[in-house]
Amino acid sequence: MNCRRQLFSSLLLPIALLTATSIAFAQQPPPASQDSLDGTKPQDQASPAKDSTPPQPTPVLNETQSTANGPEIRGMNSAAPLPSGRVSPVQLGPLYLQSLSFFQSADAITVSGQPGTNWQSVSTFRTNIVFDHSFKTSRIAVQYEPRLTIVNGAVFTDTSNLNANWTTTFYASPRLNISIDDNLNYFGQQGQFDNLSLLADLTTGTVVQSRFLDGTGHLLSNRVELPISYLVSSRGRLEITPFFEYYQAPSTSISHSRSPGGRISYGYALSATQGIGVSYSVQDTSFSSTLPTNLYQTIAGNYSQILSPTLRFSIGAGATVSSAASAATSASSNQSTVNATLNLIKTFRDSSLSFNYYRGQAAGLQITNGFADRFDLAYDRRLSQHTRFSAAGGYYREFLSATDTSGYFFSGTFGYLLTERWSVVTEYAYKHQENGGAAFQTGNLHYLAAGLRWESNHHNSY
Image (cartoon, rainbow, N blue to C red):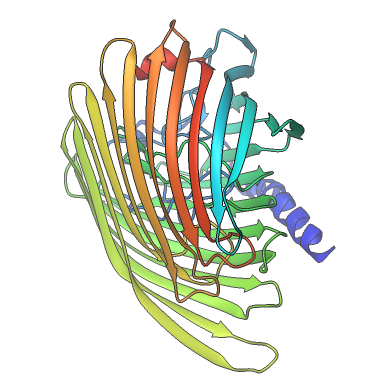
């Protein structure tokens, strides 16, 4: 019951904040001078229900969070912003069909301590339905992904996967604006994840890492933020962001965590294509009774640059200190580590390459009190007007953690475009994971799949 109360409180928080703030600030259109100085929205810790997006450097470049269609929201299973307006041939007002697919796969699973190989035949039907509505400076988007799965003849329905975002902005003056952001995610299963490849968007510099470890049970998260942004000068921006974060994964030994915290950052535009910044964040995380409360403090600096229209990178480095306190014994302990990020996105005439390295507080593959290293590399190539090939690999390792999970994967995908929106896709993937505690078993997975996919804007990627 306590977990439900915490979740209910986190869902009501943005409504209370909106009511209180609307008394003091009237909603006004964003001033013209704002557009040239809005930087990429910081992502302290992405929701694990969708993916694992580590904190990224925040440049001050020629980008904007707000558009004519409302504040920007990232698409589910994507690094690019969610499109607005008339975006699908199957659409009724703000409700539209984004994609649907059918895949048939064969899995070979070996688990440590169990004899032989477990063979599975899996049929998966999946669709992605989006509700997206903007009004004045507010935007509500719900991205819903129901599935029907047949495993060795047994039928399972999973109608619970969703990503819901609500964001609104109050413009108090030409220099000061306050936003309220609520991001709720629910993933009914922690196994057989799609979209293993690293996702990257050149226009915004956003990089999104996949979740690739296989486990059991559901995973829920909710994050509420109140970014307060002030333009100190024509080039400098100061931002203060209080937040509250809630995770729940009842199948694991650590069933839930609650994290109030805040972040203060300053970004400065060296030029239209170069930005530097510095930030300090604090996060007080309480877990289920198996772990003590942890106070995380992080200080970091970053540098970002658009080297050309086809090449963009960002780099950041700093340090994180974790202070654990046990209420039962009154004992405390401190741990520290270097944190770092490196993002590189390069596009060529018929291909693209993206790389990401992250080191810091664990990136959300499961609830943990530790830190993690994560490497990802993805290559995508258009072989012809109708064919496309992609290859990807990733590595994850926890340290100073109660779970010490590690794993890696490799995958290759081949797609053939049948029509403007229909395509045939084949994929092979290999995953290895170990020492995962109650949530993730040690073992290997070979995955081979073929299927048919329809996407509302598929032709844009070929």
